[in-house]
Length: 71
Image (cartoon, rainbow, N blue to C red; front, side):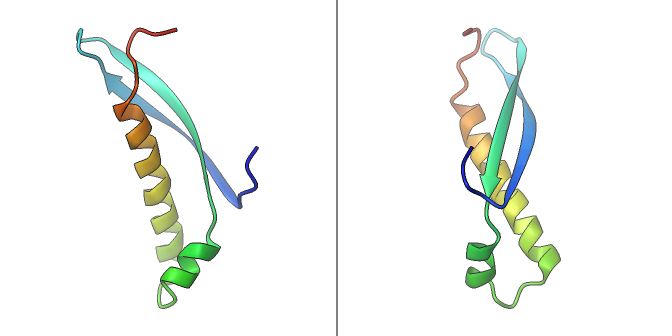
């Protein structure tokens, strides 16, 4: 387990070339401190939203490389 402040488990529906839809589960982690340093004027709510966006982007990148039909 990575040493991180926050983690989230997200599921993504991945549309496969054969028309099937598969589900990919991603556990993503992140820290708030680098975001607080990068955006000192942001509110706590803004920082959490930014973290969730970053975690979601990482998951979407993984979903783009999903190999449909593999076990």
